[in-house]
Amino acid sequence: MKVRLPEHREFVIEMDENDPKYDECWQELQKIMKEYAKTGGSVYSPTFIEDNEAKVKALQEKYGFNYKIEMRK
Image (cartoon, rainbow, N blue to C red; front, side, top):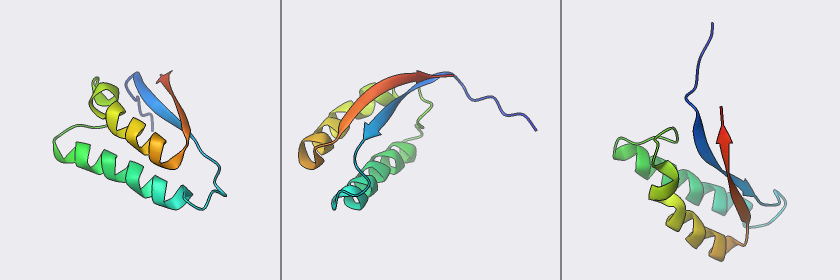
């Protein structure tokens, strides 16, 4: 079976998995994605980054991770 995923940009979150706040942060990131899906969006939506970057930046301030945006094919 072959599956073609559309070209898209995605957040790449860099956080130490041994950080005590890692699981809590991951749950918050998952919540952002679930809330976005409720409005009909997905991580493959062309505006996913623009629609959610402010939320990710707020979590970055709270949890201290680094992130970058990469193009995926």
